[in-house]
Image (cartoon, rainbow over all chains, first blue to last red; front, side, top):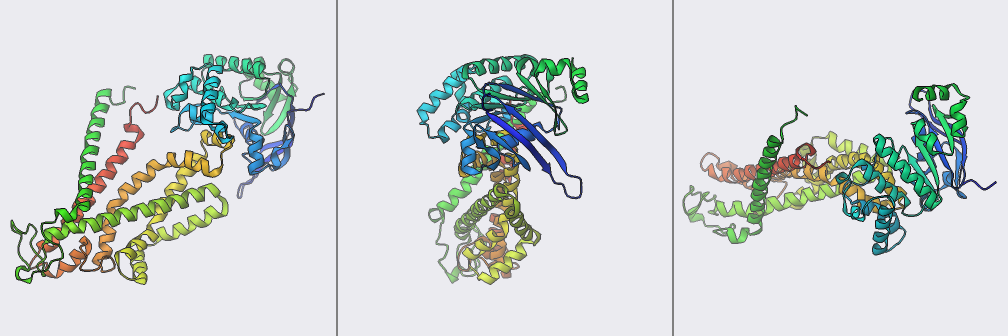
Length: 253
Length: 287
């Protein structure tokens, strides 16, 4: 069996609150993500999905446990090493318009990671235009500001930005939740296509089980910070082992 | 959408706002021009004494009269514009820059550094400003430079607070996380993303502070801790002439009026800029 691209072992985040009980935002999470695989993480609001993403990217230090990305132990990284890890993973955020600096163009945003890795300005601009076209936008969008484009277009640009430094892992943190249903379908279609073309792994965080089941190879169900179920979507949906998963499925299907 | 003001009303509001902005910035620029070209504009030498024409009432020759040494008051008020306005602008620039640096630094590092810096600024904010400035200026000794240092020392915390809260707000935005993931260094992210996004509220506050600072500088000079005679400075001119308030009131009114008018212009300009940058007044800024 191949080495997993992302391996998470007993990952825990505990927030200490003064005078109140500790909050276990994520507790003892363990799962692997294989190269080229698409793993869906579902759970309701407050189940610890975003905390999980922040820990995987190293933006939030974990209380205990490890995150290993393609041989780099992210949980131990700081500063320079962390920047090295970020060349291998990128995130697409929930709110597309807010994920771009309001005072800079979409092109600036897409070029940023390339410029930080000493790609020349002309080269970066060319790349940005190619990426926008790859994500189904005209190359003229490099000059647009985030408030000038629609949410769906902005999310396409955000995907283009995430792909700029050719990451091995793309994390979609509720990337479709702020969009309406038709745009959602378009974005999913785009992601499916990109995944085939670029052969990357996707960690797809979502609260919509119907969306996840048609798109992901495997599912992880989170409830109150804990992973309550893992498996192939068809099996999880056909025969949920956990009570919460059953409720979740019943509420949608 | 029915309760929203109609497009025409919004447009009208925006047009009057624009007119106000143009009017007040023109007036402010006029003030600055007066202080830049004060030497050319003075009809008489503001420091030339002529005791034969001392304490003259306002006339066509001497618009604001002459003081007890026979110096032309109109020339002195114009010459005072340079001292008062430039030292105020310098002071505001100093506290804006220092406050912003401290605030951004505190928010960026967080933890203990943040706590300590903010408690220090609380300490400054807790004191009545002018009293504290008096003490500082008293220790440093008189002079315009020391008055500026004293006021700067007590006025930066306001800007540090604003810069800190704005920076913290930016740190929560998704674009901030995206910028970090793009691999930029801290300095790069601060210069490219944080500063441009927090400058708006900070600039408005400093605009609104110009008037206050002008008053406080004039106040220190009035109390003898700012500009020293014979330097033409509005605050010290009022102090100089207040003994003659009953016999030659115009001598006190002239610099008083100058302070009043300039503070008013800068305050109204600050208000207008604030309104102008208010997103609610900015139709079409958001798609």
